Length: 83
Image (cartoon, rainbow, N blue to C red):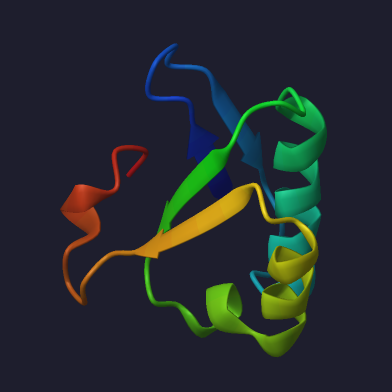
């Protein structure tokens, strides 16, 4: 499951997938992009899972500059509010 939470409103965007590869992560990023008003910046807090850092994901993020990814330190998933 991928989940994103708007800390201000508590709204959650989620996507359940059988696999958690970069393809599914990109699908989820696109879902967030569509569900979020275009004038807002998006800050994502993610763990250091390799899927989040895949080259294709990095290229997508460069083309979508309103997305800002912040990675939690190893073994610090408690910093991620949605978890």
